[in-house]
Length: 208
Length: 92
Ligand SMILES: [Zn+2]
Image (cartoon, rainbow over all chains, first blue to last red; front, top):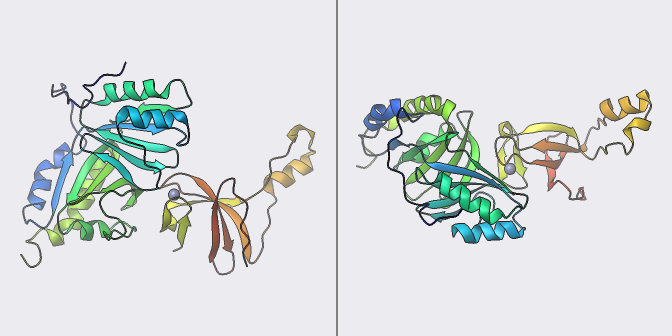
């Protein structure tokens, strides 16, 4: 049953819930003190994996139901704010929304699918989200990412599944930096790697 | 290290891909009718040209799609990539 309260975050704390990179909060903060770089975790984002033929009526209905047309250009993001659709493959997307939105979002997607050949899976617990932002964000990521991260090629509105220091990540470019969707079991490794790669940039930004 | 142009994602590092062997090897229409020798020929025998070779690759660390590439086995130059279902492009 679709409802209109999907974007309202359930602020109720869930007992015992701990985000995969929670232990790194203090070290992320310390590494961000210089001003040229900001590391942080955005815990518990809703992530729903969606597979559907982009040419099917179901894909069109889903776009209407969530108010975001599914992007068909490879490596692009549609929507913003409380609901983003990231292109993962020619018939695969991951939808990002605030914590607590999963049940309502899954219900809306399932209803819009209307029994067609569509897969909707809540994968929120699969990955956590790390922020690598600031003037030095590109320099840090370039230590372990083979993509061309220049804004001309990989600017806001673009996303990519790739590897960072050999760990699989979904990289999302924003105005001020990047979000990394990292598998929960890799979060500690990627956090350690980011902190290590950040050492030389932890001071004040060049020219500051 | 090769830079392989995924037909969906564009140029990506070779480490993001897995190799899938020769392309366009048709599954036998009636496998049960094949002799052991014919079945073994289907399973294990592949062309081994020096030069252009149509082969399958999977973009495992990216869009996770299989596609085909025409690669020169002597120079490693990739002459064409094309999506599953598309015909092999004419290459020099
Ligand atoms: Zn790809």
